[in-house]
Image (cartoon, rainbow, N blue to C red; front, side, top):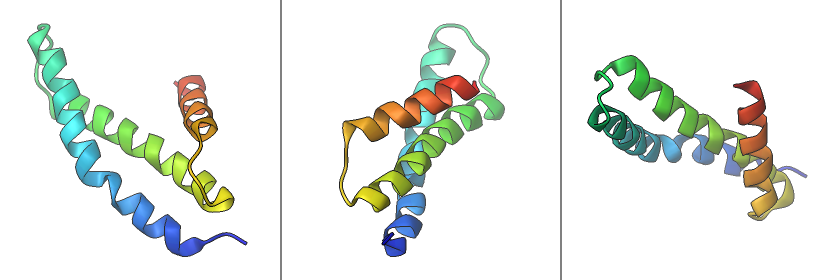
Length: 81
């Protein structure tokens, strides 16, 4: 049985981390000469949040963390684009 109490916090908890790391990745782009834009920051932050959001249901179903969850989420996101 799926632990649904695990899914809601798991979707909300990575928001601060995605915001900060999106800013850091966007800062690396800016240091290489790319213009600063809210759109690119949103792409980085949204991608990081989506990655974590894809891992959450897998952890809830299995009840534990696994490196295969990371591989599956990264592979799906890489395939999508």
